[in-house]
Length: 196
Image (cartoon, rainbow, N blue to C red; front, side, top):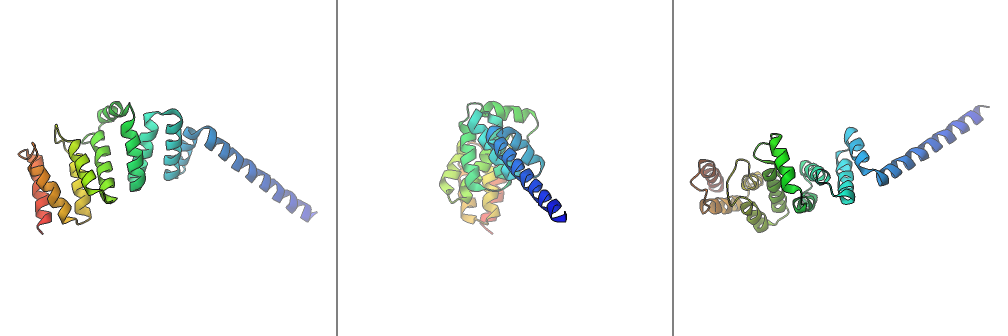
């Protein structure tokens, strides 16, 4: 009798496990948006990012690629950051999405946060020139606070890369914004670090 109870319990547990795994697999395939929220709720942030990316590939909604990009940035997955942000910037709704985030109070501008994260990831991957060119290309008309050049500068300082700091300072000195207080403060910080 005792063996029958143990055998029945084991079979029941096995069937329940199989049903649970099948449900998880079907939901992963059929409704990645739901799985994205579920995995985020239980603390599986990277899985949530992967489901967000799958949801984006299926429907093309900018919110999903934004979420996948933001999580990759937080997790410091540079190769993934570059790939996701490239797709994010290529989305037709990128500018509109950034404006909606700006109105929600993103300090320094959401687009500049994304640009800065992209430039910094490129730099950490060894693409120094491409990262610098990109950061400056998105700041040709203005030099707002917390922009891509500033993010790239701090990535270089974090790595104690005096040569990169010197290069950024030199390009800033030759820019149209060199006389602005914020830009001139940034030049001073970079030159001071480069000359330590």
